[in-house]
Image 1 (cartoon, rainbow, N blue to C red):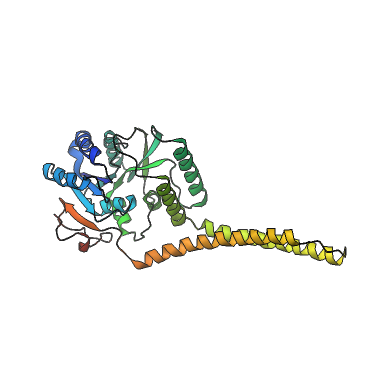
Image 2: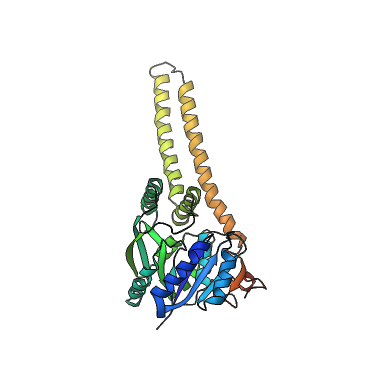
Length: 326
């Protein structure tokens, strides 16, 4: 039977790694080919623990980044190095139940190329996070041509053809949830209740969530730029109406209306709008600039249980592994 790779990006999750391995090996059993941890710049001894666990467990492997490159880069590295016929992406905080993986495998073998999971509830999510998440999904699905399942988690299974297509994508500012839906492969969904984090603190602050939301919107929609065009057209029409009114007052009523207030209001309105539009254009241009530099998405300092960098269009190249990698 084809094997399954489990990819787990981790950042300061030392206390959760051991229990996660035990639960995965118990739940997946014979279907498990490897558990690949990607250490995204941890400073709590996670990398040293992974080195020890890779010596103790033959199916546990690890990549250690040179620094923090972000969760999307860590997930992408896992897709580059995973060898299974299907790849399961999941967090390392035990909020993605390992016991759900066998059901995901069943759906994959039943014909689904993508098995996504939807959070019904998250016990430790505050009202601000819930409201922000709901607002984000409503906005992205309103303006994007690629629909994204609301409340979808990064806990999902991808068949090998999907993995290979994702590895071909070369963009650096990634929103994998959107890219996975963009591929268009047959998809199944599972619902689950996310338990409270077992140990440690969440690494997704409000600022990181906002940055990820901005990346998603700018990666999958040109609507912000179109807003500028339509708003500019509306302002032009309003200006034409106002100009006609001013001419009427001057030449028909033969009176001059003091215009200081109206000039200030119109000037600040147009100036503020132009500043916002220039900022949006700057965001798009900045992303173009980042793409043209062609820097690697991530750099690997050490690798355990992996002898070389993967081949193929999506691999980072042999230089991604340091000479000391094992």
